Length: 233
Image 1 (cartoon, one colour):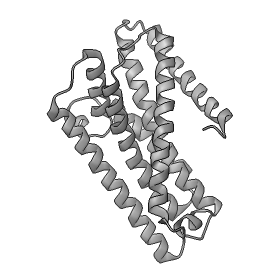
Image 2 (cartoon, one colour; image 1 turned 90 degrees about the vertical axis):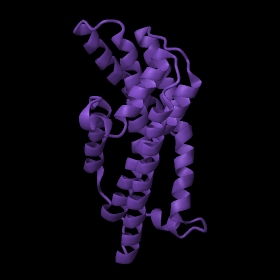
Image 3 (tube, one colour; image 1 turned 120 degrees about the horizontal axis):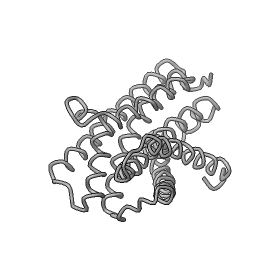
């Protein structure tokens, strides 16, 4: 973020412009003021998942196309541990990006939500963890197929659909959506969620991460078997 500060500022500006479009669109349709709290929290969840997914998938996609992925695989730490280190470092930058965006959106709407550090901390980990799961799976596909930029855009839209899925029927089984709704209830109600509901979201996040890691490791083994690790296009 620091080395490419102009790109980081541009990404934040784009995110805020998108939020302004949503905000003024909601106002144009005469939505009550109370709805803006849900809009702020929903957009915060969107920023976390989108940035988290893009960071992980783009890292592996770029490394696979520029010729440095093989060097990481041959390092003493191995490709998996190197990727894990990047995930941890990206978590800090994603959380910072989300915090700045959250403050900016609250300032724009005038809807200052109560600062509930446990709520935002736990839900940030859960939302980013679920986004990382999709990013790892896409990163594995990037190892195998190299050029998957268009597919990444499709998956980005799928994540938005998951966030907006209604809390009924299969919507409760989809990732991301139930987590951000729990965050909304936690922040606006000011009360801890039921232990069962929180436990379900933790289990959902862990399960998705395991699936993402399995897809990533399977693709890595497959690429090694086919001798494609050193092929960059």
